[in-house]
Amino acid sequence: MSDQMIVPWRPRDLPLAPCACVGLEIVVSDLAKCLLQFSDGRLAELRGCHAPGALALVGNEAALPWTEGVVYLGRDPDVPDFLVPTNQRPAVPFPLLAEALRSNLSGSGPWALIPQTHGFLMIDLSHAREMEREHLVALHLSAGADAT
Image (cartoon, rainbow, N blue to C red; front, top):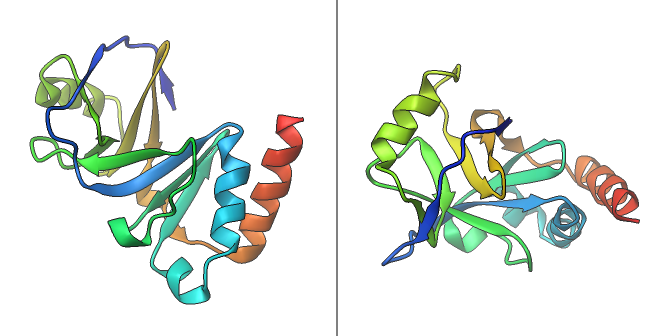
């Protein structure tokens, strides 16, 4: 879901511990390819979901793939149901922003909140499920084809 609310973001003094990551647009193919190289055991430690142009993964920091271009997300202690970039914070009071966002959302989250040039991208992470290799192959091929 893309929202038109423009919210400035600032660097965090201390980064959050990563507990999720999101690949956007052309990074989706690289992220899916990286996941295909994981063992079945390591892949089972992650939960994932995708939206048009995005692949989101949830898991502990050690299980997350480290791929160039991926946005790593952490849980802000003031607003634990929104996962935000580990190195950024909203320039407005985050609890007030979260309250405004929740008023337009259904479900209990968690949600990934990724700042973009014109607003932000929100992904409902409650839909994250175990990643299947066949699905990752399809994502890798279709995202790679979209990039050409």
